[in-house]
Amino acid sequence: MKDKLTKEEVLHVLDLARLDATDEEIEKYQVELYKMLVEIDKIKELNDFDEDLLIAPWSNNATFRENGLNIPTGDILLNVPNKKGNFISVDVEVVKSE
Image (cartoon, rainbow, N blue to C red; front, top):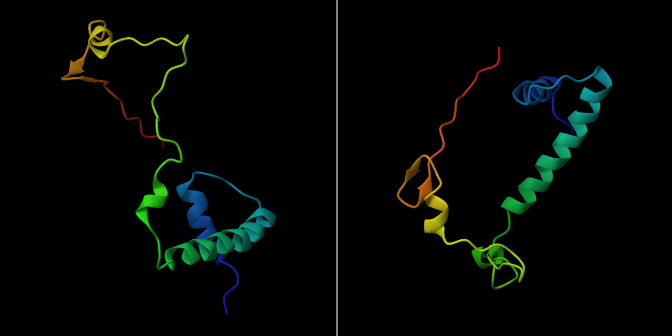
């Protein structure tokens, strides 16, 4: 049975993450990343997974402290230079690294 990833698989992961590693670290990652994948597979095998388990354990997610600032959305949008409906529009510039 396989008990670790190949060196090439680890190098591929490191490349995707744009990371470098020593040979000693690569050997360590071969085992550790494999163990992580085994644990993920165990989660995938759960038959009685219930989406209700993903609900937060508290009932009120958006409360403010008594001394917190609570500004109506309309007032906030008055000061926003770019908006689309009730949303703030933000321009993002994508820069590719070489």
